Length: 144
Image 1 (cartoon, one colour):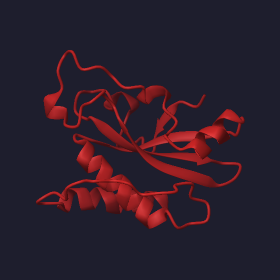
Image 2 (cartoon, one colour):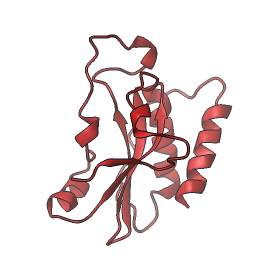
Image 3 (cartoon, helix red, strand yellow):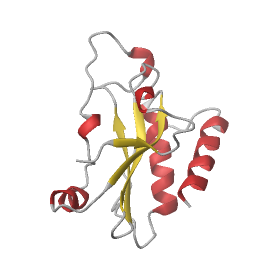
């Protein structure tokens, strides 16, 4: 099993994930041998969509051992293909994470080595999306 790494360790540390500031993250799983990759989003806590609603009784999800919802990605992992899991960015709301996940899949999803098969999201665009747009621009540069 591969452990999570932070895509940008100068900006993030793994303990930031459960610092109480974020409820979801966007990640990438890379298969170095084939050059293929998968982009996804994961909730850090069960049934929590906004970190402002975090309670002492809120339970963590299975994020630490999670390998995605893709059957083909999990089949590759189960078949022993080497992989790397990287957290790209953490978000205080699942809506923000879903928007960035969708944008990244839209941008990189048509590449021959992308394993994402669909974009399925229902999310609201924020009133002032400048900060989120900046995050998207930074991630696009990182993933080129």
